[in-house]
Image (cartoon, rainbow, N blue to C red):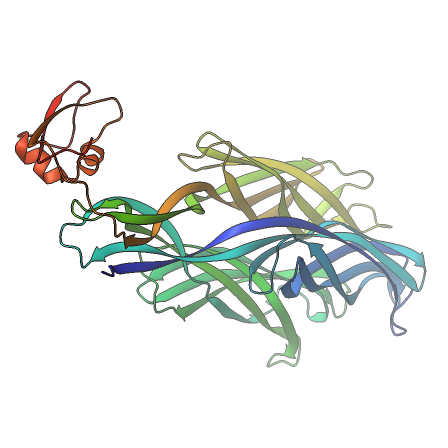
Length: 517
């Protein structure tokens, strides 16, 4: 007789392998003919982004581009002036990942390990650096397990609750940041925009039934050269952006984590009512990638038997990746930077980025170490060298509390720069920043699931004794005893007048029926 099995499909992603890709950038660029010769490179603002990723057989292929905005000092019509040139370089690379296949998922982190700009001659510069990417490839697993059994009246099932992390959805969102910035009358008119920096901060993601709500702020910082005085000025604006993504299977009780990426930035300078260039329209496209995970509790069948039939059971062992927990903390990074040469008098603009250099898990916590890279453009007291730049790497360390974390578990960490301030303090440049650190700890758990069961033609051996007195041994449970003697746990409890399934070594139990020795 066939047994009717009720099965449930389990799908999950397991980390296959991580791979680090170091992409060396070296490119020479010619200064446009309409701009003056380079005398000194002041600042290089480089922003990399991934444009395409593809998992192949045993490889991960990555395409990207890096946009470089170079500020340099030159002699213009009215003496020393600051100019800028913008270059975009594409790159591509492979990473070897054993076992990778085209249907697998991949996540990528992209950071600039090192980059610099130097002068070859007055009309040519060279940009050299290393872009570091970390690829994580996840293998998809899917298998069916038996959840329940019908068609056998006296079937006995030992069920055990099991927790499985299921990736419910990976919705992508697009947040469009639009700003209409008016330069106040106490600042000079715009001559030329030299840099437009956009950074995502103060982000928040909420899960509601069938929807993912994503919101954040885009901090816009504009550096421009005044029309008449050639003075360098900055203006800032904070723009709220949000998106609501429909996800039919999502509920408010699930977990999520989201990454943001500035995909594209464009701006246009316009005249105001007085005919002066005092209006800047900025549009930035922010892309979000959210992973929604549900921790589902499933009553899995650990064991089964029938007092009247012999059964053949097929069990398989699996390794499941389970998320222990995730958390986000803020860390403050402060430093007073000593300046060589002419003392600073005023900060014009501060740009920065944060990245993690090392991470490790200790009891109940993830420890991270990293660097805050800052580029600060400032005015000096030297009339012959009015503008200067200082670049500094400031180390930081912090901890993310995740209760239950152990040293042998795996972790994912990310850091983003939430706020950056710079000011002149006692002849030094005082830097204060706030970083947001995300930590996620997971572990591998070994589980054995019942995947098939079928009846055997062998008959149960007839019982010879009407009652058996059994002395409980070490490791015994009522389930094991009932299965061994082809009875049920309920009958043992009833016959021995037990209040629960707890039994003690040496305790005597009455076994109903005829025992199989």
